[in-house]
Structure formats: C-alpha cells, structure tokens
Length: 74
Image (cartoon, rainbow, N blue to C red; front, side, top):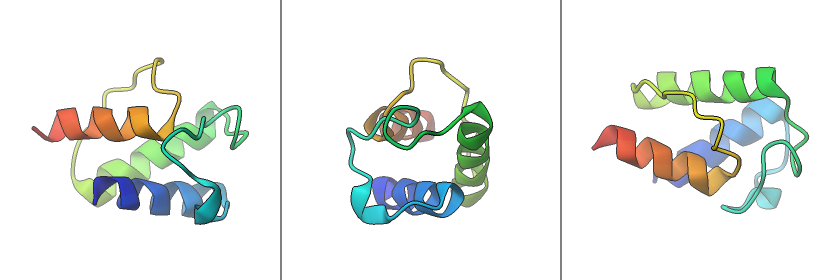
C-alpha cells in the first residue's frame, strides 16, 4: 500500500506516467528529477502519510524510499 501511494505521488508531482515507475526506478537518472523535485515528492508523502521523512542522500530509487518510509512508520 505504501508503495502504491508513493508511486501515485511521484507520478503526480513529476508529471510522469505511473506505468513507467517501478521499484528500481532511479529518481535522478530515470525520472530526471532534481533536488527540488525530490523535496516536493517527499513533502507530499509526509503530508499524505502523516510522517516525517529524514532526508537521506542514499535514497536513489523508489524501493529505497519505500523501505525508508516503512522503517520510519515502525
């Protein structure tokens, strides 16, 4: 469920088709997102899931973000 929410938000914020977003999708390389884009995605996820995401430079893919969120929610 978290993964679906994350993909929906990424799709909306970056204006890309959900079908091209996979767990292995890299924000910068595959979606051409810059740091502001990523900040906006994280901000929207925080609002939607009512959590605080500590920014981590090692988060590069959708799955890494989902894993980070799941660890935060525990």
